[in-house]
Image (cartoon, rainbow, N blue to C red; front, side, top):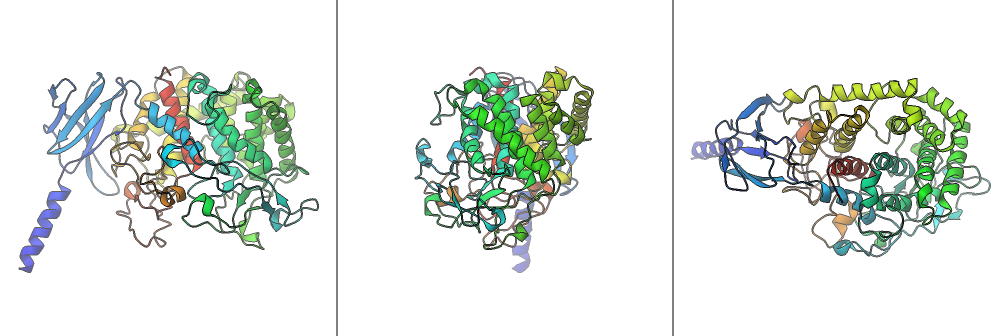
Length: 571
């Protein structure tokens, strides 16, 4: 009896493992975009059926097969051909089915949702235009204490300051200068290259209908908070506004811990300087809505930069914070060369002062890497690429060559990859926030490369990263909440867990597969399904290592998908 049961179990496992699993972009494709699916479990040669919107049945062939270097699984890459008519194409393989959607504007809704997400995570105001997600005010932050680590003679420990507005940073309720400034800076880089698109994009926020584009209005909500984080006496910038410990999974209005501004840091101050310089320049046409901001931001940026020059080693060291100790996110960084490069480049574009250009040349990177909060050198490169004068210099041409060399290296393994994409072919691609920094930011850079070269060479590869992000991957998830046929339902996000709404906020990008699994010891009710780099993901609220959300990650989603949508949209 035991042997019979064991035989049945193994037989069932064999059947399950040998079932076809179709991996595909669950959101949609452009008519001119390549149409590729990936099949696991069986060789689908001669078994793929595609029914067109008009009822015609096609039988595409397998292009090639690829074996995962980590799991050993064989994947079959199937080219569906030129499916250029709009509509839904029904795909079936051995009883497994899906619909591939072809649309003129497949990314319009998800791009808009990725930006509107920032309205839903605003701090310090009641959310009244969120529909199902409306909520009362939480964290007004009009009574914030100066932590001993941030104390000065004029602002001793315990001084009460007001620091309202801004965005909740991630799954928690704190506000961090480094990540806020980086997030805005990345979205500004996209805005500069696609102004016409963003000038027409309506995200249904309270400011919609004024004289300023909605993206800039949304950035202003966070910029207002950032201005309060600068010490008015010396120009330095507090590293973060935080509670001593993370709040529980409760709604913002139910949080009651004391909130503090903590130690000034050179990295926060330089990121602040960079983003304020950009903001002063980009908001110049919109002073009717924000009449005092340009002058205020210009002064704030220059004062911050001067403080950083005088305190170049003032790095944030959370372990030194006492009375109370602080145990929230650190955003610590022991190298400020990249921040100096971004800030000096942005300040030169704003002021044309030679001293900033000299500094930018001193701090420029020798190698291009995708933007992240911990390495913002790419934001400095984007400043040079967006400025005709700077781009034409020898340094600018070198930076352009470095960016294009990065792109060439990024795409070289596509034709042998498991999922026909630049992203996901190296174990180092996966880790904390990989879907943002390594997938979306890579695709953003690929689109930027097309702009610089005047071609569409790299767009194909950027679209392949969209395919991966939205379902053509090892887990079969569309990694953006509220979209696709299988998307995260339980992100590590306090509001989504604590509100009475079943579905999480739409438009949130989760961190993605993370073989480090730094949270597995803390998870009481969940276990990672796999240790393989590209499968190390779990849709569970407890998984902060793979399923958290964050503003910098969503900023990369906005930058990528809005640019992609801008290339094909007529809003």
